Length: 534
Length: 92
Image 1 (cartoon, chains in turn brown, red):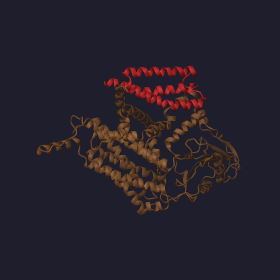
Image 2 (image 1 turned 30 degrees about the vertical axis):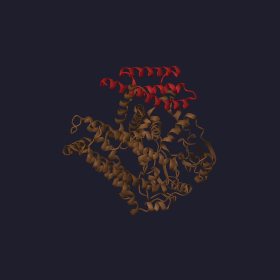
Image 3 (image 1 turned 135 degrees about the vertical axis):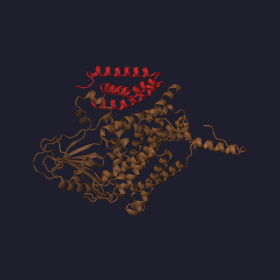
Image 4 (image 1 turned 90 degrees about the horizontal axis):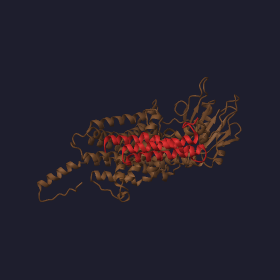
């Protein structure tokens, strides 16, 4: 590969990595946490019993909806399974005169509920659970989701460019993988950045490219626009649905949903994921059952629709074309819903490597340039900005996340807007950490934030043992490996952060190390201290 | 590298590169086999690779001017193919 090409890609790599690197760090960290979101959903509601019989929960959901929203336009039920806290239900009321559709659904709090393992409406603490991190990693927070997805989308494209240019630029990519020089300042940071990048390179390439695919409707709508004058026609082909029904105005009893779902699971070839009931209680009622996305790679699973009064099969989704399956499988690879516990651990560890890759790249930028500063005590504005943003994001965001988990434990369970306040807690702590990162000396800011993050994370499992029924001994005895894993990961991460914080606290910059050694050499001329040349 | 040159390359990489990828998405959506919905999806998947390649080319090209010129040319070719296949770029 020519020298010129490699060098040109080096500059591209630095800038495409740096400019939105802080956004990428958030996406990687939140996305990595999101691989464990189901476990976190349960961990953050320790009061809830484990789901044993998903169909019994469905019966409870039907009872609940028939009592609470008997003539809603649509009911949506997400089936419970052993890994979820229960069945989430939401409904859309009938539209009032003049409105095109009823106001309801996932966004509103008064048209949704959680049905627990016993089939009752849950009274567990209100929380967004692990799903917060999942949503955050593409919707961010406190901003319209379209803006967030554009920002994340552009950052992801830059990430893809950074990975590809990084591969081109890296001369001895395989030999260097086995190189990790410790305690050598810039070289060590480079080795760490390279190792975490190359170690999980197939994962990083896959997750970045498939991340773009998940946002393709927003980021690259042009192919649709070229071929379809009406975007709905394209949606109908790719997401086929049975025709919508008009309410007939004649009351009719809904068949038992669990019976229909049993038949549907047979036809779909796997467990059910979602159940939708349109116009419940009316003679035109219909039940649609979609296969669980977790049971297959393609995230656009097949669907069947039944008559809600008789239980007769009305419609089955047609088999999708090759390109549609490919796109669905790519999204499936990104989300990893199909992953069993072993595969999920691999996803998680690769995500951790990716987060370390992004963080070490950001820090490397400052380490490299610090040595070339004309006046190290007064760096130029760009350098100061990068240095402080690194603290704010790389240290501040994990600290905020740890604080949010503590808010989940400590906020009163009957508090109004409790779920929203858990999230506010994250941002309040993150904000404070950011301010400290700009005001204090970098070393001090890094040290206390990393140490506090470590302490908060490591103490959570202890708190669980003392104050909840789901501490490690209890969950291990009950073979509840999902909850036990969360506590274990928190403990290990906490210890890891404390170790890093100690390293930072003890760090002496290269320049002052060399000055100290030279002073020692001058005082003892007979002992020759060798400092390796950088 | 001179600042003006880098600015041109950055323009080539992101806004122009994205536009070129979008134009090729439109062209491929019209000429790939398999029916409109299949070709549309395939074209969209390929477009991201084109966008990344355009960004890499913007920095590998011998000058910023050359980067912009080549990308504009490739975009023009895509637009021409799109138009030849089915008329106005935005489906009527």
